Amino acid sequence: MTLVSLIVLLLGYNYLKGSDIFSNLNHVYARYMNVEGLDNSKPVIINGFQVGKVSEMVLQSNGSILTRFDIPKSYKIPKNTIARLESTDLLGSKAIVLYLGNSKELIENGDTLEAQNKKTLSESLAPLQNQTQALIVRMDTFLTSLNSVINPNFQRNIDKSMTSIAGILKNLELASKQINTSIPNLNNTVKNFDSISRNLKNNDGNISATLKNFKTISDKFAKSNFDQAVHQLDSSLKELNLVLKKVNHGEGTMGALINDKQLYNNLSSTASNLNKLMIDLKANPKRYVSFSVFGGGGKSKKVDSTQKP
Image 1 (cartoon, rainbow, N blue to C red):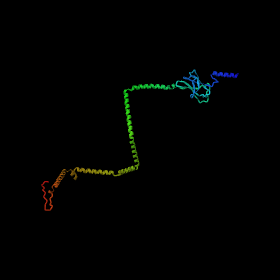
Image 2: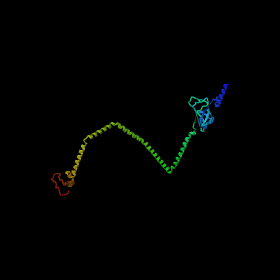
Image 3: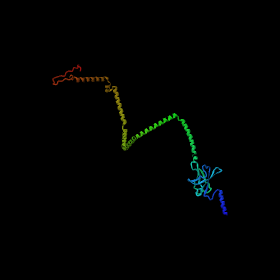
Image 4: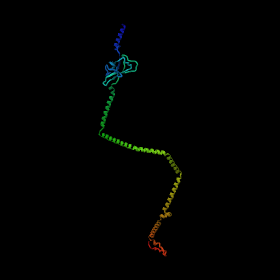
């Protein structure tokens, strides 16, 4: 009789406590500040697999919502598991997603898990939306300013600038083509330079010997009595200059011959008369020479000195 009374008392106590000792479910709790989109019978999920469902939500005095969800006792849930409220679709429906902890202690009936709220898509995009709206306002201001700046004259200047840029690009293209055309010549030039460099390298000994010979000649020339030769040449030039001065002043035979005008005239007249005599001699030889072929006593005629040639 006493045993029956104890059993009835225990059952009554558990019933008043809200637990069913014959149930195979663990009643687990979590406190959320916002349960928008969460209703009774919403799923409790682990890695996309439903392990329970929401059974009750009660508003507390501090504004939080005490949410109860039931999980079969067959699932071993660590006590440090996190119960996060997350959206399950784009319409705003929510579920409780359990992120298992690593504690060795498992939950029991009536335990409370740590609760978290995951931001919805709209809540996540709210900052971006605000930034986008601010950017739109700035773009509107910029476009308004740009519209006031861009006038027909400005557009014409832009067109001219674009035309100039197009011309520059065309010139660059032509220059590039010319460079491409000149590359073979450049390659040949480089090859010639390389050939010259190899020749210089191969004839390094000859070049060194030539430079050594030039150095020897230069040393000999430096050691020669060059100053004395220059001095002798200067003395000779001075003496020649002195002779020329004497000739110009009529000194000596050469000076008299060059500077005496009467002597020059006499010599000129004598030369002229001699020239005339030679001409007459060639024209009238018998006038000056007479002889007999047979030796007949012919005598030379006396030349008439008064007869003109």
